[in-house]
Amino acid sequence: MKVSELMSQWEKGARGQLTKHSYEVRLPLEDAAKLEALCELYPKKSADAFITDLLSAALNEIETGIPYEQGSKVVTRDEMGDPIYEDVGLTPRFLSLSQKHLQRLKDEQDETGK
Image (tube, rainbow, N blue to C red; front, side, top):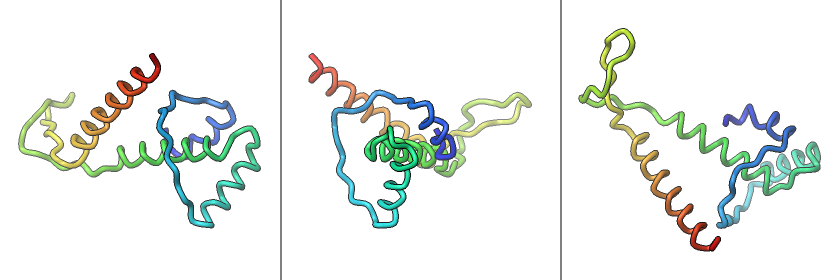
């Protein structure tokens, strides 16, 4: 989800599955003031919910914004028959690490949920 889509989601009140871990953050004063303004605009949402949504959107934008680095290996061809080369940049490693930690967090939740 992009940051620009958040306000429509806030109107609908959508939520995903949350981790049992909590993270504590200290905000710059200007960001804290903006967070408080959002809480006033959307009084049914908590500051924690806004932080969760904003962080999720920012992480998604980071993932899609990691620059593609073309490798030498052709992994497929597009509809015109042109080669598509493997990405040797940070994206594959980021995705692999994300999946590793997602599985670990799911396993931890399964263990504590029993």
